[in-house]
Length: 342
Image (cartoon, rainbow, N blue to C red; front, side, top):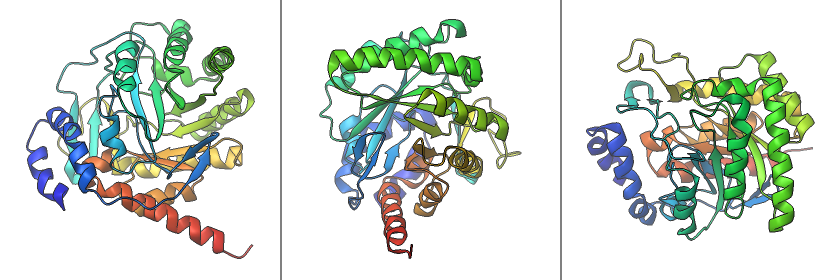
């Protein structure tokens, strides 16, 4: 109810200004939001109080962790973060398409850099599973990309429960090339070798997930599944934003460059999940993200093979109540599945 009153005011502002303002007051929203029911799950060797998480991109700099936890999320994926600070693309770089419950962003992996990110995260009282989305700096060539991911992993290792390798943002030139089998295999090998050194040093394990794009054909998705299985990745996040404009063509801002998220992405991201699930047969946990604007959408991702789900654009359009709604839908699905005849 409160968000229904606040949304027109927020939507009257520039989207990036509204984004910052909403984050600043998310703690107050958390005090008023309905708390979701318990729905514990164990995924990637981690215990989640519920399977509904925040997608990367909302709290890029780890500045609002406690406030976001108060909204009822079972986990947060913060970032993306890069080794060195970078400003990203010039504003405006965030655009709403309300008629389609969609958003286009071309932030360009704006980041305060891993050192300041760690300083911010260290000040938070961690109360849920925290993942960190990590990427390479814009000016790092692809043949040196693994160095950037290793740097982020090493710096974040004491604080993160998992890291997600972002190889799929459409707003960093050449980044999606890392999804090719040869690049991807080398990247995962390098990161896992670094993880093994850090595991021995710190005496704890940090899971490694891979975030992929929705703009892949079925053969490319299967190739990624093959590499992920062979190299022993801990999880796959499907998907990032799309460069297609299906579902928004002809609407205001639809021609802006950047990645499209929200309702128009739901069908495509769920298709990617289904292909991965069919190929992997539960060998690697899947995290479903893209177009979740209702509890039914969250349950659909689980039906498609996801063990966890994440929301972002839905939070912008529906508000904090979406978190509890999605958890309740996941819990109802779990109870139905457990009571079904075997």
